[in-house]
Image (cartoon, rainbow, N blue to C red; front, side):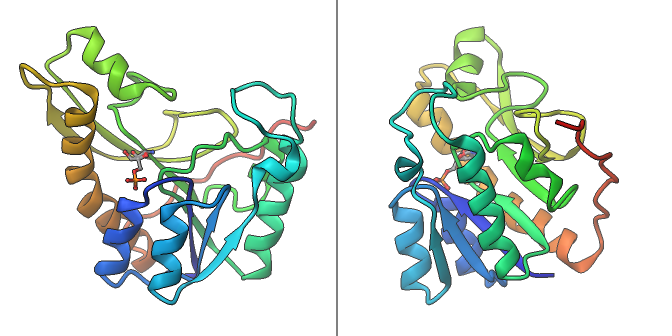
Length: 203
Ligand code: GRF
């Protein structure tokens, strides 16, 4: 099963995948970032589809060419014969059009116990909520952001007195690194079956 890993940032989850010898065909990023550098240093093929070239200058709005960007990402992955796409700290919301490819074969990892605390500020929101635990969720991603319809696995992390966002997020990541590697291995070996995800609504 040919795996692509999508990153935008520090790529510490990716680093663990590399360390543990997970076979990765290509690492793709939406901007120059440390994750991409880690992949290059490990001799893994990389692709950069820079979202700035599609008019993205920050924010969550749709005042940029999200669809063209997302289709280019899909094209590059298809060119590499990718069969499984693992988002690992990929911070662009891909256009719905992306999800017609790799249907049901796109995973994402979210730093909260979905359906609790979806969205960009999951760690802060969990902290602010007064909850005593949070965690991480691996899902099959669809066009709905942080969709909890297809949860593959979860890991729990306690929220400790005196936690701040950085400290809590790092403790979550300590759990996430081996967790994502394990789940991806289970998918690639066929031990964990991915669910059938119905086609997206016609546009
Ligand atoms: C992880 O916490 C993951 O849940 C979230 O992004 C973070 C990626 O961290 N989607 P890193 O860039 O691999 O350090």
